[in-house]
Length: 167
Image 1 (spheres, rainbow, N blue to C red):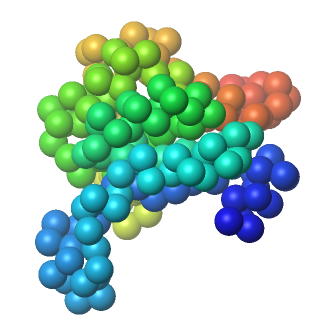
Image 2 (image 1 turned 45 degrees about the vertical axis):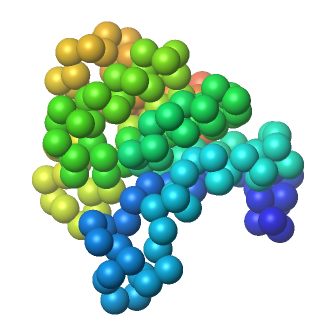
């Protein structure tokens, strides 16, 4: 609670890891208390209601909890999602189906690019391709996901945005 209050008071965005752990998580060493029901984006609601100016993004777009993710995006417009690991760890068909549900529900402006590519060298390339090759997205929606939505969420200045576009 003190961290959320401080972040809200200082207008600092907060990323919350929502989504699955590795397959078989409760049976792996170190994860005996893992429960799938606890990674629902709905778990954030009390925080969001208590801190309405807090900017939160849900990592991995809450996969696989699409209905819970859509409910949170609808109810709390300050929430964004990133595509994180789901853009390259899931099958392309599964990822595109999940992203398409979010976009078709009207939340395309709340989706940000994410990669989780630190450990997997080719993941960044695959993650970018998963957006650029999505035939259900317009060019404008692709630009939004790859840059514009994050620029807005992070409140980048016009100078920062201009500098990034010059590169």
